[in-house]
Image 1: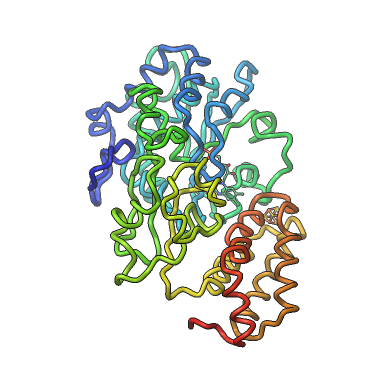
Image 2 (image 1 turned 180 degrees about the horizontal axis):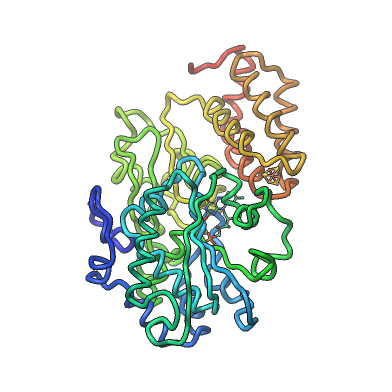
Length: 423
Ligand SMILES: Cc1cc2nc3c(=O)[nH]c(=O)nc-3n(C[C@H](O)[C@H](O)[C@H](O)COP(=O)(O)O)c2cc1C
Ligand code: SF4
């Protein structure tokens, strides 16, 4: 436990899951009751006023996304919760669903009402079987109490919710690939536009949000938009953030922290500092697809705006820390291998470019580099950036590109010495 305000993790107990009785005792489903008393448009406005931003990686403003949805269009429409969560270093949705799955159900019911959507799916990968069972139980309990199903709490609004277990690949987290996967098709991304809000699941209007994004929603209706914004340390941020720590720290756990908390406080207070009293060298602040930050940037607040000003992204707030014994070329190679393996193969810059990046980094790391290979590496990064069909390859260029800009001297050193200077 820590002294930071706990909203999403307030019912979290080691090895236990909060189901309906505990959830209701802590104020659960009061947010839904409050939202159902408002008009759907007011609900969307309140989410906008709370400045909730998506927790799935891109940080898109949630209320704004909901306001683009064709709410008045009759017929089939779908609401999807994205729980694919295969970004290395990211495990917060897993922790959330192990601890308190009703928050997702309630958040989705409010979102469904706000956009007048009758059917939803919670998309989870097969490895999250315990989470899937938790959500199934939460859905059954909520349906039994009239929080889901027809005529929710006498509002005349109905919403049914199902769990989908996927085969699980990184690309399935991309929302249009997820939709293809849910339809039983090969999960390569679709071109945008049309966006899912116009042409989504089975060609019908569809809204996709991350699991943690939905889980925040009930609290905006119990505490109010102003209170929710005030939870953050910076005016640019709002609410709390689930931060999963990994790498060379004394403590690697998932914490709920105020949005805008300085990175240094997270590393030193929550993570207990760098392992074995070593020195902080770099971190990935928001999952494997975000550019590295260095020790000089440790005072950056963890919110979307400040992270972008620092040249990186808040992403999924999965922070991986590297100490001074890390070879950044080897660390980046490890990440590049992941992205190359997870490429869906649909477009050339990613399918052919990422294996080339891997090969070049392998050569340089093994001491077989040359100025020519370094130039080829720079060209590859330039050729892939901004040219891929979806954001997977762009995400791969996050750490790879920042290896060049922040640790270019290490790359040069490998070539000059003909070996890795660290390992
Ligand atoms: C390769 C790739 C993988 C992604 N994986 C996830 C994921 O596991 N979970 C997630 O919520 N969003 C993921 N996203 C982002 C989604 O496409 C989408 O932006 C997000 O689910 C929207 O939810 P939000 O607005 O609540 O963040 C991924 C995107 C890409 C390009
Ligand atoms: S960038 Fe990669 S994952 Fe995305 S469409 Fe192209 S090949 Fe597929």
